[in-house]
Structure formats: structure tokens, C-alpha cells
Length: 79
Image (tube, rainbow, N blue to C red; front, side, top):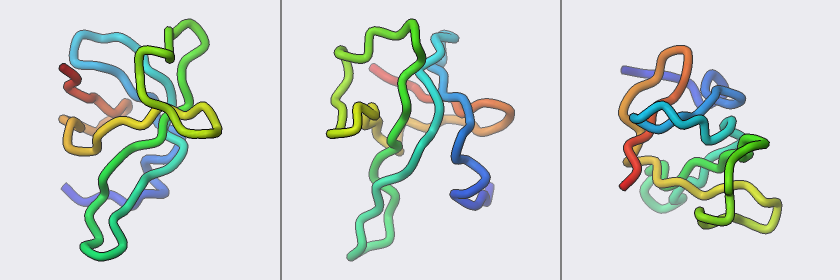
């Protein structure tokens, strides 16, 4: 599957059990390898975002490797 990052920005992010986490704002990329390391997600209004690591802007930092599928929403498998 190939997607442009611009196609993913603004997509809803949910867990495999259906919990809405928020929307994709940006990505963290390793400039040495070009590998996408993390998703930066604006938390949903009713989400207890303090359970997740966040950046200075309050966006949740979620591992890109946990992304399982991309369709109408982005599904992450978080443990």
C-alpha cells in the first residue's frame, strides 16, 4: 500500500477495539533513514490524553509501527 503523507493528515485515528484517539496532525521522520517513526495525533475531546506521551503542542506521540490499516480511518494496535 502506498499513500502520501498529505492523504493521511486529518484522518481519524482509532484503536483496534474501536476507541477514537483523535486526528493525524503530522509525522516524525528519521532524517538519516527516511523512516517514519511516530504519528502526531490531536486527541479527541473525550479522550484521557494524559495516558499517552505528548509533545509541547499537546499532540499524542504514537508509534508509526502500530499502524495496522488505512481506509476511512487509520487503525492502530496499541498495547
